[in-house]
Image (tube, rainbow, N blue to C red; front, side, top):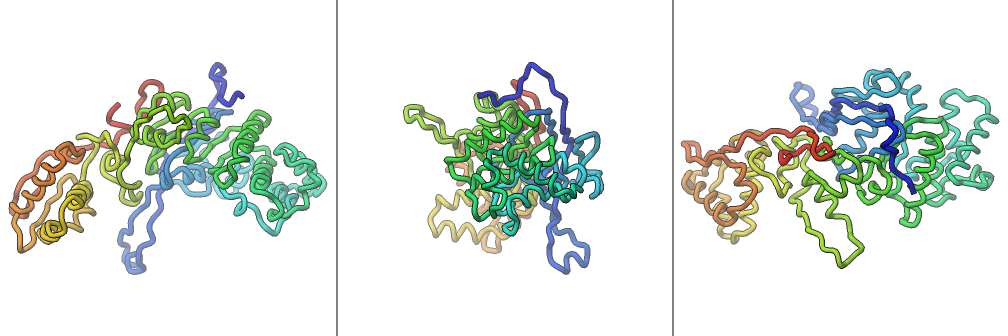
Length: 427
């Protein structure tokens, strides 16, 4: 089965995303808003560049919270862009009025994750699929019915007479998603954004829905943005894959190259998590520490460095990493040692909210700077090869306590390497 775009025929770009950012302001308290205090910003998308060619399938892959769905919604103008542009159909989506966006959505449609939530339970299938036609001005019920019949036949719901008068509750999960697909294609779009379209379905029908989407792509000359956390289905379905982490693309390339020779440590970890059905094949496990960080307070330097097994000096260490290292040390200590050492640090909670290059451990009244220096020295002896120490430039006793200075890290940009683009200091 041919699933990949024919590389021999050059195709023009249908979507061009440049430096796109989508930030959401945190609500904060009433008093904070009243006095104009900063309440924080969630950087859901933070400087994404991506081009889609006509007829290809581009997969957006990453953990929950990586920004995949927000990027998909930005393509439809469902969330406002903070910065950057999305050029589609001769104009910038981010600069269009509500009326212009409504007209544009004839050509861009979305398939949502949960067909149960995507369908109105009070509408029969004929009404649900034909509703976009009514909204966009097709007043003739006979014309709408003809279009609905054609759309349902295309998605495999035939004979259509059996489905036209059914409610969503009368359909199986796979049939509901076919109805959603019929509604998405009925306006003749050029681009479909599919947000986890098979994750809510039984395993027995997932491959059928993906094959249907590929058939529709060929029949209707569609372009897909396929949002998923499942690399196995992305391998089957996509021409190119963009690996996303904390609102950014960290690796982008052809599907085959991503799978055969992954570059970014995050991509390697995702691939290592795919189960291998052959018990005779051994695979090197890639352990990621912790969870995806808070997008309202992204790590300094490379956002992936707190979890990266290959992090080194240039990756951008900060006081939060010092806190994590000390907590790891305490996990190896006895209760009495933990109680004593914890009482010696006066500002331990404050360190985690300082996105700076330096961190100063301040001694409590019952301790001295020498005591805190001894704590750090003991932790280093316990694990001298810990990644954290690669990012430490100096540890010095001062009047205020012990100052830890980190190396000057930078945020890596996407760079070309062996046929893919990767945002990592290793390349």
